[in-house]
Length: 263
Ligand SMILES: [Zn+2]
Image (cartoon, rainbow, N blue to C red; front, side):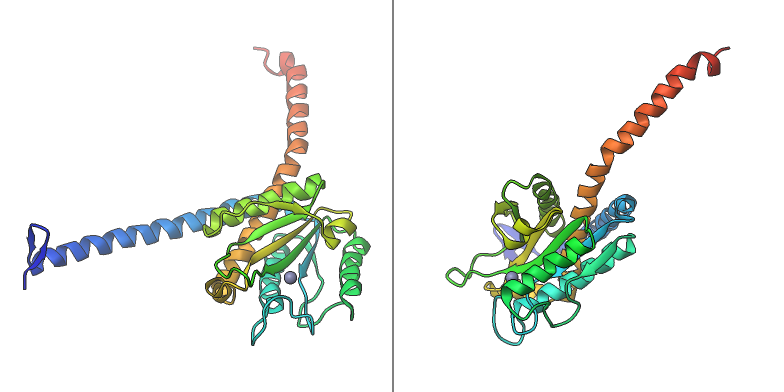
């Protein structure tokens, strides 16, 4: 049966050829995406040596009777924990020492402020290098609001850099948010001596995004993006030392040059 598209009369054979071309193109796109993802993983893996010996607190927001944002069978605390556990795994694999503020459905203190204070204390007692807090956002008045976003304490320079690095990787690797890293005033940011970043992994008040946040594959991609941001921030920190070593080597080389290069 011929199909008319504008002035073109397409026979079944044409449609089959068209379908075949589309399938091939789709296959190429899939392969390209998979290859790209593989390269991303390798780039981050190649840099991840910067995590060796680092102490990192991974804080899954809320827990126990403090469900965080959202209500129902799944709450903010649950998706926070899922992403935090995956992030901890990535960091440990790269050689970091990770302290989780919780690894199950509980919290550290029985009262809200006490709970936060104990989370901060865990980081201070272990002289953590970084504090990564995982939360999910909520905006009931406008359920169309969506997208992950990072936050740091206003005026905290290193935290802002870490926040930018994590946000950039979330934007790049997930491709579904154009939010900007933002500074504000937070209990954790105010009371920690190491760079601290709060990652709001998405909005529980956006039903589509909340569904995504419950998908283990998406949780893994989110955790990897945060991990990748941490790696890139630390790699940036490490560069001056590497440069200094390079300069020393060059200096030595220049000093020795007459001897070593003499014909
Ligand atoms: Zn929260």
